[in-house]
Length: 572
Image 1: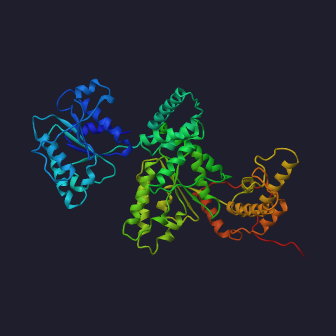
Image 2: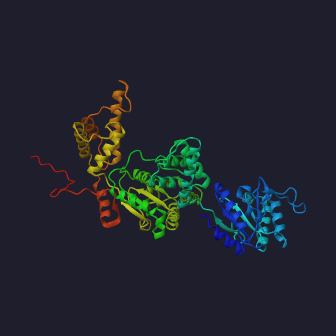
Image 3: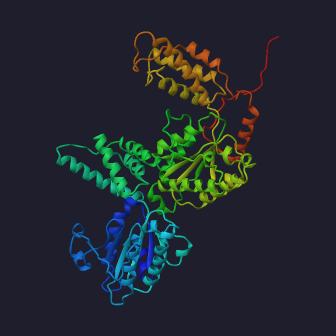
């Protein structure tokens, strides 16, 4: 929410010029706030000011007098053009020069009317070009004159850096994007108006959003201006012809297409749900509560970031996407490899740009895949110190950022400095347990139309399919989830080849497959981690020493059972 009281305090304390960094889609609303502030500022000449605007299209325009506007509705506030006196204007100068000369002339007149000048488009005339040097000088003169007058100037821009030369002349503020409470109020109001509009046209659009769906819809709209939120919400409801659980997904899709054009890369939705992650279930529940705006009332901090560590193929990237889906948050990808540039400082600037974009669309997840390869200790050698500077920039942001941006990083090994590790909740993603392997096989076999979805719960087929899953899970000790997925894909291709040239098969049909075929493909695909027990044992010892928690805690071993990794022959 924009701090209008802070702006009022600055203007009343003598700041003659204030620059407000405001997104384009919010500038109309900002102007309305500024005009109301000008006419409601008080009853004296020093506090009530005549609103005057300027842009390159319409030039100088004045609102009606404050007395008239206080008596009229805002839709009746029609601006009129202001003519610059001939003795003030000079021919052949850039467009803002007449404005600034007029402003200086008016502000220097002790008997003149106190005005609030709301100026747009001016920063584009402050570029380091000889043609614009006169604009730069006139703006400095105007800022100085305004400090000693009753008039004030508001420079509305988006993303301009005024530089050190204006540091003591222009006070800078930022108009923020709508936060979660503001967005929630906007969504509820717009949905009511959409329903009323549809009803007036003889259409019915019932509101079937659950409280959870409403929260997901609100979060999907965060990171946009009010205009952008209204546009996406109206389009999604018009397209779906419904207000239900599909609404947040439709909004997220359109929002991502918009932001991709700004260079923001999003992680795709998971193709299958992650399995066997009891610790992650608890984290989702806690994080969802922590993102509730009411948590701030109890001084609860934002959720800690996650570092997922484990062997390749164990589903760490899938977990990121799964958490994004469960929380209803966008998942932005931060690829450190794409940050590297030849220019000195270019990599750090690209990193700062992505971090700023993530803060803009927060709350969101920021996925840093294979972070150990990018900024681990082994990656810091021979790059001219770029990795060290990236780490410093990243750590500084992790320390200082206040927006709810949750970093979820993945790594095969914990080859990081203690300073970096302590900033994360560290989670060890081990090879899937027996129960998890059974769930992974079921999900992928159903996805490839090799098992019915849902599975029968009783009868011969239920017993048969359960035997299949138990057998396959028992055969795949030391397999990763990715390797199990590849086994199922290979079997599915073999089954599809059998029916491709035969009778036409539809997606409602199951592809023909037998347990023997599944077992044969499994045995012909040995796991990559078989025999690599030493490294895994080192990771397990690292976890045992309290350095991380298990994403999928090991299943308890039956009493009297003994686990051995050695191959022992009992033959004579």
